[in-house]
Length: 378
Image (cartoon, rainbow, N blue to C red):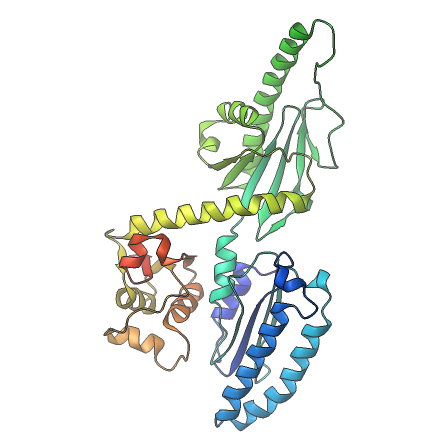
C-alpha cells in the first residue's frame, strides 16, 4: 500500500530520465468500470498510445525502442489483472532506463486517470490521494460496547482493533458482534428496570471513556471521529477528558459498532472527505495574509527552492497565469517538462513538507492566490 515514505522516495528520485507515470481510476463502484471493457482500461490504452506518439516524435532512440517492448508488457498486465486485485486505483511508474518500476494498489479513489511521460516520476495524483485519506482514529460507540479502529488511506487496520464491553469492562481484541444487549423491553416493572439499565450504562460509558482516553494517548491518535447513535455519542463525549475531547474532529450519527471493516470504511469515506475539505479551506484562510506565508506561484516556488516551505496548499489541476518568476524559482522548474503545480508538489514532498490539495473553487483565499499558498518554516 502506498505510504508517505514511498511518495517521498518517488519525489526524490535522484537520476531524472524519461519516465512513464500511470494512475488509473479502477473504482468498481463507478458503473463505467463494470462494462466488458471498463473505462479505466480504455483510458489506459489511450494514454499509452499518447506516450508512444510522444516518443516516436522525439529523438531519444534508446527510450523509443525500450518503450515499444515495455508498452506491450504493461498492456498485457493491465488486461490480466483480476477485479479483486485492482482496488480502487492502480499506480505504475516506470523509468525507461530500468532504474525504477513502482507499483501500487490504492483503496481510495483518484480524481481521474493520468498517463504521462516526463523526465521524472509524476507524483501529484498520489500525493492528493494520500492527503485526502490521512489516518484517523475511529471510536465506535453503543450502549454496550466501544470499539476502536484505525482508518488510513481507505483501509481499516484490523490487527489493532479492540473492544471494551459492558459485561467485561476491559479491552480485548475485537472478535465480532456483541453477545447481546441489556434492553429492558417486555420485562415487568419496565420503567424501574430501564432506570437501572441507564444507571449501569452511565457507569459503563464513564469507564469506557477513561479507558478510551488512555488508549488514544498510547496510540497517539491526533484526529478522532466518534460514531454512534446521537444520544449515546453525546453522553460518551461528555465524559471524555478535555485533552482527548479536543481531538474529536467529527461525530457521525451511524451505529456501526459491530459492522464489518469494509462497511465501516465505506461509511466513513464521505465524512473524511468533508473533514478534509473543511480543514483545507480553514488552512487557506489562515495562510492568506499570515506573517510566515507565501502567497501565489512566484512566492511559493521561490520558497520551495530554498526549502522554506512547511505546508503547501495547492490545486494540482489549476494552471497558474503566466507571469515573471524570481531566478531561484525559474531554476526549480526550467527543463522539468511537467506542469508547474506538479513540480511544486514534487519539491514539497521531497523536502518533507506537508501537502494539502484543494480545488480552488472551494476557497476564495486559494483562488486569490492563483492556486498556491504555503506556510513557511522561517
